[in-house]
Amino acid sequence: MSKSLAIRLSKCETFVNPKNDLEQYPTDSNVAADLLWNAYMLGDIEGKRIADLGAGTGILSLGALLLGATEVVLVEKDPDALEIAQKNLKSESSWQAIQDDIENFTGSFDTVIENPPFGCQKKHADRPFLEKACQLAPIVYSLHSSESREFLQKRAQKEGFQITHTWKYDFPIKKSRSFHKRRIHRIPVIAVRLRKTF
Ligand code: SAH
Image 1 (cartoon, protein in one colour):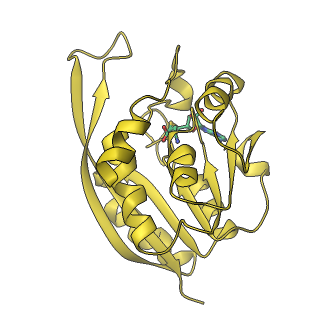
Image 2: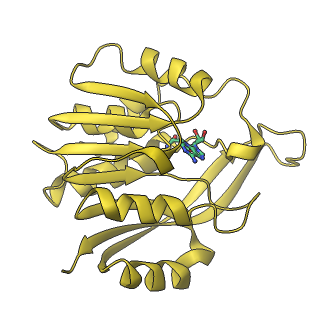
Image 3: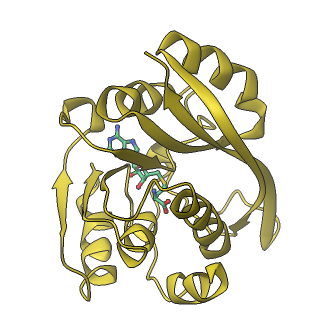
């Protein structure tokens, strides 16, 4: 099942001119499908209201909608990315896109999904994403560089959340920048599921 989701997600259009300062790297379709399928099996997608922070071209949002989310809100500050997301989501209903910095976004959701900047350009660029996610929903799925494990543990605790699940992925990053030397570069990534504890 996650296989057919991966095939569908692999048809998504992606960033045309990815912006370095925003660390625009799309989630690989296999990783997106696997993580969302796990989230679905844990009861966090179907019938749920979901926020996708730093939604980019919308692959995680599309996957959530295909797995039966009631509503998905995409928050993304780059209008060019959102234009592509709109194309990727055109066959779906029950979603809205908000073009803004995640810092300004408020609301109440069942689940947050996010693949934020990993902080390669700006150290701990994922911190505001984690903080915001924990304010918005009692369940958070978040992707990070595997080096961030300790940081995640501490951060989750500080926000009153615990890590209930982790998944490890090798994230294929296709050559999309002049400073990338190899055609496909793999970086170890962890995905975490956080649950509010109080
Ligand atoms: N979630 C998408 C994109 C990942 S790349 C996917 O899984 O494919 C990270 C995204 O976060 C980029 O699209 C970038 O433009 C966006 N972003 C970075 N900082 C942001 C901020 N402060 N507010 C909103 N979006 C931001």
